[in-house]
Image (cartoon, rainbow, N blue to C red):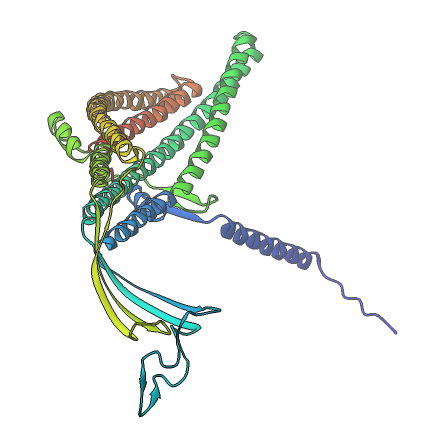
Amino acid sequence: MRFRQTSRSPHQLLAYLLLGAVATLASDTAIRAEANPSRTLTVSQAIDLALAQNRSLKLAQLSVDDSRHKKEIARSSYYPQLSNHSALLHVTEVEGVDIPAGAFGSSAATGPIPGQKLFLSQGTFTSYQSITSLNQPTTQLLKVHEANRAATADINTARVKLTQAEDEVALKARQLYYNILIVQLEKDAAAEEVAAGEVKFQESTDDVTRGHSLEVVALESHAALLDARQTVLTQTLQLHDLTLSLNDLLGLPLNTELHLEPDDKEQPLTPPSREECLHIAEANNPDLLAARQSVIKAKASLASAKDAYIPDVTAFAHYDYQSGISFFVHNFGAFGVTFSYDLFDGGRRNAQIQDARTILAQAELSLQKLEDEVTVQVETAYDKVQQLQQMVGVAKESLDVRVEASRLSDRQFEQNAALASARAEARAKSASARASLLEANLGLSLAQEDLKRTIGQMPK
């Protein structure tokens, strides 16, 4: 038997190796793309996504649903209660009536009446009874009304908290979005500083080699370069942490790669006047709205505690069917009124009234305290907006100066009047000024949105 041996040229082997490498690279790229999904978002899209998928908002919505169902439970007490009670009973012995012979006299025609001893049983050993009753509370409706007032206050409080959670999530999404953009720009500026530091370190090393400068100058340049590299690493870690936080807030997989686009169309907001903001906050601030609902609920609890001294009067009607019970027809009905009152309870009702009054006093005091705190918050937020507006103007002037300095440095370098390190430093400072302007603009936008949240408007 002979084995046929085929020979391949080196070009064919190289082609096979390249084909295998390309296939492996394509497979690895597909796996990475599948493992790390990417998402491109604008700030408005990020806020909409957070409002739709954030888990905290879903929990707040479930709290609203829970309060609404509890209100339905409390409201059901207004209506008559229709119920049925049925029982099957078997006894081991029943009572009867013995009638001796002639107990009712004697007749010449018939003889003794009765003619023999009789036993009349009262009922049967096994009896059955079914009662269908309709009960309508009357005086209890006062307490039912207060319970419904408290349940309505709980619903309104849950809705206020949902709105407040939406405002906080929207503001947090915007804050994380802007922080990522700022850190990205700061990272780019730090990379420019690294490039400038490398050029300056090379120039310092050359000067030391030629004997034009001391070795300490090169060491200082090297230290500055290492500081710039450390800044880049710090910004990279911070960017990773911010991306994880934003993914979690948006309800996305934590390994999602986000590509954030600056919203150039977004115009700076013009907030209302300081007096208008205070007036709007007084009417719409979520904390104040929730505190007012707490006062309403406390008043309802106090009224319900006082209603406990009113007797319980219930009107009822029922229809009975029985079999095996003496002296009752099979089907019969009854109607009437029941009266119930606690003659002595050891001071429980009075203690409940005092407790309800204490809770009401706490709720009213908390409302007054919140009114003052909200006023301080609005004043502080408004002052911050005005300060950041001035900072944006300063940052714009600084950027214009840095851009002009970078332009002059480029011209001097082209004319051999400046070192490469000077041009690189000028470019790095220009990039840093651009990051500072973005940070100032985004800080102003966040301050304006925080002011909107404080006065009870959606920061979107």
